[in-house]
Length: 355
Image (cartoon, rainbow, N blue to C red; front, side, top):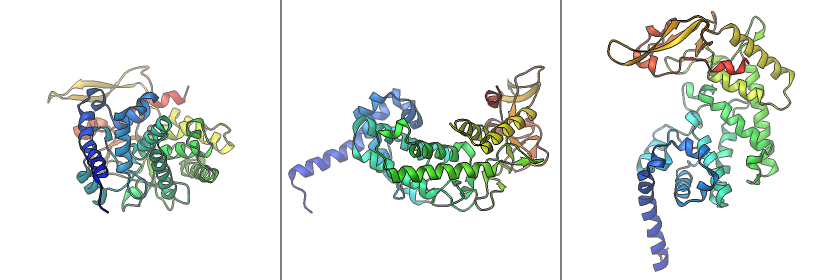
């Protein structure tokens, strides 16, 4: 169809805006120093009415994949490169819920719609929700990637909050929580989301590892068919999670308004296990090593705050640390510098659940 003069001018203006505006955003240090996640969750509501916020929202809509999800690690406010993004989306990387992908975009779209009432943001949000509903396994778990990718990507994934993030969204929509009311989501969708949330709860309870007949904690990943603990990357062996994944699940369960006996048992069992498996009288010491690099090691210190390892052996229930060679070690100093400093091996954060 031929374009008349007015339409040609409008079309040209849209193209220029799409090319120039990301550069304008990129030049503003107040935004360029932030992550997209920070914009989605921490910018004031009024900011979403501004032109720069709308331009970012339009990038989020534009690069949403046909299945309704997004690929990960995209900083939409720094300007999206269409050719690069198209290459990523067709090279097998795929849409995912890893590293906050899809959830960050959905939160941004939700806030953009509430601020502007622009239907394109609501429509894109709905497509993303349906993507998550389609991705859920019948047993209630969520894979890291959908459509499914061969390898650990298809495992039920608690790592980095992947499944827990999906659960919070399903619960929020299913119970029509305040932040979703103005989206005016229909009853059928809310019912589907609530069912997804309840099936997810059932999956979580089934995945909790039991030792000596008692519930303990959770693993990072599980086989999508057998629900048996599973490994991921070479240094992420099948193991009990002492922080991170277990913390996220515990918080989700503790947020239940009317917890069942099964949920109460799961919470109690996990808290008791954490208490009995804390690393005591040790502290993480930061020092400069022989190569002049910042480094860490565990050092004895009486009455130091309790610590927990990221991984505990499934059989011995003792902490271990692992390099890219896949060999577990009992001392963090025995793994390579790159892995020692490039992963969250030790934390004191579970202490907040034990108060």
